[in-house]
Image 1 (tube, one colour):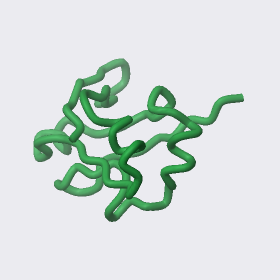
Image 2 (tube, one colour; image 1 turned 90 degrees about the vertical axis):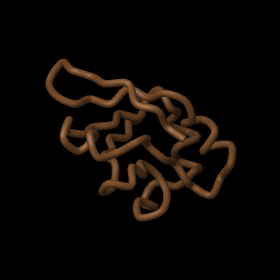
Image 3 (cartoon, one colour; image 1 turned 30 degrees about the horizontal axis):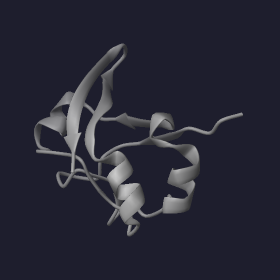
Length: 84
């Protein structure tokens, strides 16, 4: 059975992995895969974030998340947000 990671951006900085959110290691993220990461945020939280950020300390894992990611903002609603 495949694992999923459910995460929300930290504060107004927009970090989803790394910095203040280091509980999930790059090794775990590599195993789980980008397609099994679910990002949740309210529309008001996203309004204060220019882009999502990843700083795991592992360049390959950081690159895996760069580009555009779907963020669940409400039941049945998603927004596409840039991740740098």
